[in-house]
Amino acid sequence: MENNLELELDEFKKMKRVDRDVIIFKNLITIRSKLGDDKFHKKIQYVWLTLLTGFCGVRRFFSF
Image 1 (cartoon, one colour):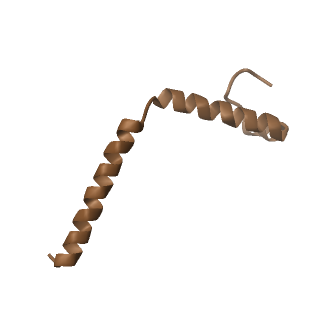
Image 2 (cartoon, rainbow, N blue to C red):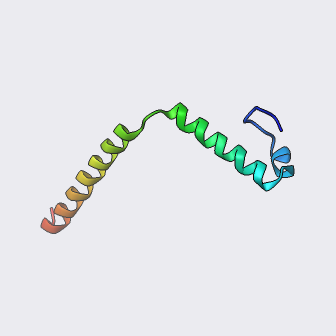
């Protein structure tokens, strides 16, 4: 097994289940660390979705 997190599909398929789980976990941690803290983006997303849902609900209720 390599220290590198990038593998070919055939190499990945030949690995044991535990080793594949470890590789997937390491990749997940790497991706999350590269994305950084996304709590701020989630807050914006939830506010936007709440406003959009509210607007659609009000629009349907008042039949604009």
